[in-house]
Length: 304
Image (cartoon, rainbow, N blue to C red; front, side, top):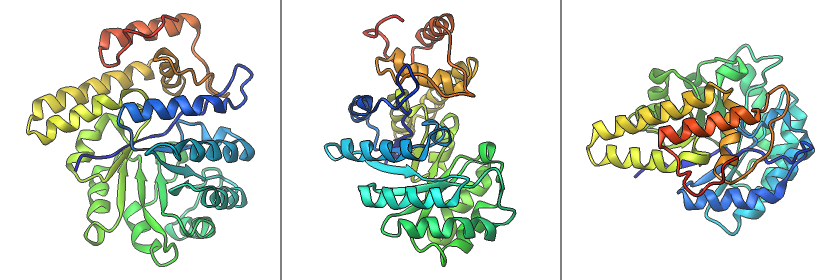
């Protein structure tokens, strides 16, 4: 079965930097058209750590409401440095009707052991005990690089709703161990778009990535080529993904990725400080570079 792509949607903001929830429906329509299976709300791409608790509650509610009329699953990222806030967000996600919750590790006062991390997660997972709980492992941003396999081995007893990991971690050896643990007991969602082909070949049960917001068809085509035995075509398409990501990185990845949404006609507004928005000149150059890549369909999109 082809891997399911889950998009972590950008949080739509207006020119004042306030939530613009009216855009969520357009994002959902776009995801349905491009074959995205679900949304991972308030993740890194959605600038979750930069949102207030009330904003995160409102955004989760809106996504659940919009998804009721679609086939999109809603996974709410509830992680916070403040455990009571994370508990509140998890309770709300369950009460609102989300399909799952996920949590980052705390990144200011960091857990120094797997047991510390389990201690932190236990009341959060319990607050949404009716929903699957996924550990969001992203050591590059949290600075928490505890052994994920050990976490899965030790957490099961205390987190009975533990369903798996959103694995945004470059360690592919450990990734294979997670996939194979207890005969494939856990869902391991691959979180590195630029290496999805490797993750898929190694057994990823899903994929969550920021470029699925605007380039999901590229990855569907890549996976189809691999499944059909055309490794050369699959590798060529993965290389296109790398070029796309490198292009965004050259402008500052998070801001550029959000800017791409406006280029394809779904304006999600500015990013929040300390991220820096692109200038008009940078937007022009970004569009020009995207046109040269020929990865996105920009033929009918207005020129900024």
